[in-house]
Image 1 (cartoon, rainbow, N blue to C red):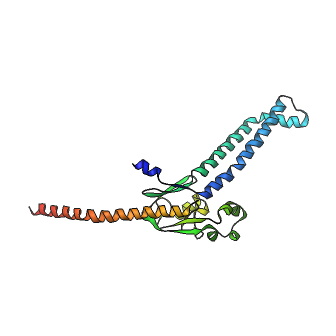
Image 2: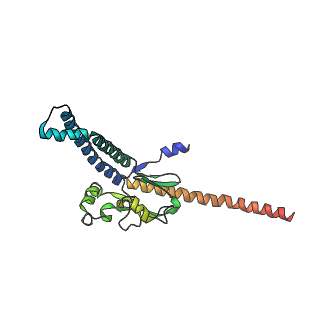
Image 3: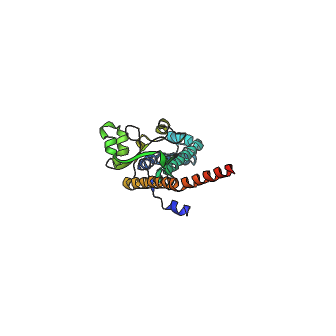
Amino acid sequence: MAKKSRRNVKRHRLLIYHEIGQRMRVTPLLIVAFTFVLLGIGWLADHEVIGGVSGGFAQRLWDSRNLLYVMIGASVLLYLFAIYISRTSYVEARPKTLRIKAGLVPVDVSYARVRQIRLVQLGVQYPEKKLKHREVALLDPFMGNTCTAVDLRALPWPFSPALLKRLWNKFMFTADGGSLMFVVADAMVLNQQIDGKISDRQARIKKKDRYLDPIARAAEQQAAKGTRK
């Protein structure tokens, strides 16, 4: 049953990291393509298809092909890393915790730590005129988006606001840095999910107080009777 309920939880992709991953793919692809061109020139020189001055340079390329292979391998790894952070960065309202995975750093936040959830406008939090050119390019597809802001009483150990701001992208936070901010495709649904989990937790606490306290009192009374005997 637990596995089934987990599958029913909607996972919201973090659009900022998705965009970062998309952009990170371009450079390694260009490096791989350019390196294959160099290898091709070196192969032609080694097989004496080309010669002369350019052939001497091309032969040196072939002699250094191991370095070119390393460049290709490193670029492929970077490309795979870009795909990874693009596809695996998300926020998910799980039954007991709010799971946030931004890049390589996952954080589970208890709903007891959530002080307030609200909707904010990305363009209001980060006006275009206050952003650098590369930041505008990153946020431009989402400037009109409504986002989920989560005000926390505290972060789970061992994280602190300063540490998370180093580990996560700055746009994972509101402009004042005091709250988490999730740029997702459907912030309204995410808000409803988090609010529902908080309500469920409060209901469990009330139920526990309502039914366990009398039992505890009965146990105490029984212990007191045993002491008198």
